[in-house]
Amino acid sequence: MTTRIRVGLVGYGMAGRVFHAPLIRASPGLELAAIVTSRVEEVATLDPAIRCVASAEALLADMSIQAVVVATPSATHAAMAADAMRAGKHVVVDKPFALSLDEARSLAALARSSGRQLAAFHNRRFDSDFLSIRAAIGAGVIGRVTHFESHFDRFRPQVRDRWREDGSAGSGVWFDLGPHLVDQALVLFGRPLAVSADIVALRPGSASDDWAHVVLRYDGMRVVLHASLNAPDAGGGGSPRFAVHGDKGSLVKRRLDRQEAQLIAGMRTGDAGWGVDPDPVEVYDGDGGVTRLPAATGCQEQLYRQLADTWATGSNPPISLDEAVAVQEVIEAAWISAREDRVVALPLP
Image (cartoon, rainbow, N blue to C red; front, side):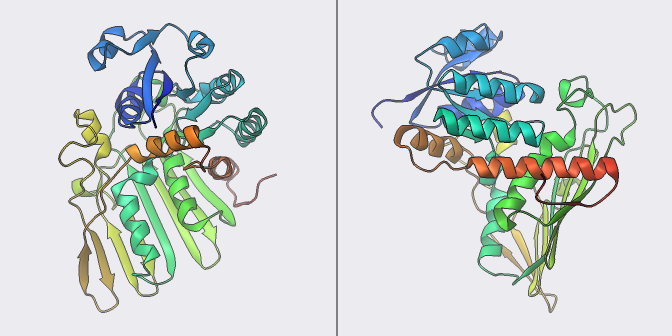
């Protein structure tokens, strides 16, 4: 590519600062040209060439910006993405893609009618833990999968004063971590037949859900998705990241991908050790034997590199509109199940 695509980022909080800005800048085909934020000094430290913009409206009015990344609080995602597409921009929306299935379907319809590319930011498809488990399942290491369990746990026993935990629309662990868990499951196994869920607040004083246990029902298989804000990851005594059982054995991946921690620490793609995961996949056979497979290397930067190619050449996007809407369908089915205490069949109307 001789001309880089100019990208505008809306929001420079945790998601924008830790994930989007460095991963956009890691793509040779993209230029992070502007950020909607009041954190002018922080942006200047990142790169003084990046322009700080006072409002999303001003960014959308800039005809030189070709793509917009929405990294604002969850309740604003759908409206912001729609405004950006109407302004003629390609759009990336941080998770959750929307707050309802109707919103997600409307966004997909607008993308198709406007001719703009719209993508959900499912960066966790490029995590070392998921890539490792996906490769082992695909290679038939444990035969036919009958039970797949995926945990995304954090240890935050004290409620914090932030929008993700304040009980407002889009807050809570299921909207925060659920999209990652669901997207990975659907990549592996497709749409389930039905969903059952328990989503609750367990920490004292918690205004939003902080514990979610969701079961996806497939013919001959169950997929368990679990997220908690009161459990260390496996290295600290919690549940393994993945436990997968099949008719020839089991897979266990204990630790979470390291790229988030590396980005927070200031590491960038291309640095020595980027994405390297020292935690192997443990393979248990039916006779009690254990072998260890080296983990794949994480590569979240690939999402923006593939999007850059899509925007420049019209190639197939790394995450399709149908996939983004399918994730939202399961997210919503889980909410219905938890609220009404029943199994919810798919597809939803």
